[in-house]
Image (cartoon, rainbow, N blue to C red; front, top):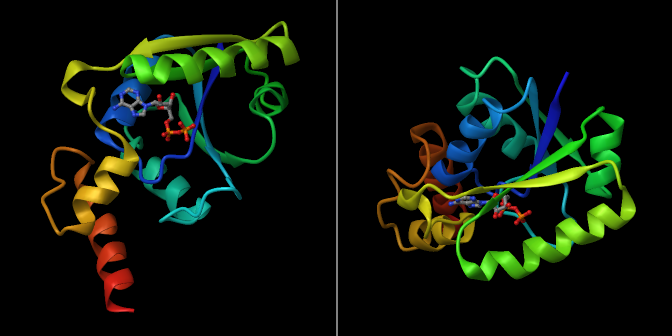
Length: 163
Ligand code: ADP
């Protein structure tokens, strides 16, 4: 049984994330999306909201599960019997950070391999921060995030600007 994890903040999940999830899910028996409870960043969405969005947008993928985690990614992988970490690569700017991360993880756990899927060119410019930035100016984010996520981002941004 080949189990992989795809860790990230997913605040919010974008079409770029979903593209990586669909492609990674075809390479393994089970793909676990790990939503990081990141206390250092102040996210737009709570951990539960991010988990829920990912569950909804991946509901058609039978071998994908969504969980939250805190602490080291390698510990989360080990606890779930996964020996593969999936990460996405967009531009050269991702490379330096992702390389460091994968080397630290390799140092922490020899048995776990990080594999990188390169972005779909359509989404090479796309990040969760871009989506939040564009939405904060009430500009159109359709095509950047799945429709279910679009509604929630727009509601959340409106709530924030009303309060
Ligand atoms: P993190 O805070 O861990 O970087 P993100 O939610 O921003 O979490 O991203 C999770 C993973 O998805 C990272 O490996 C990131 O490079 C990748 N990723 C994000 N956006 C895209 C995209 N548009 N195309 C491909 N990979 C992406």
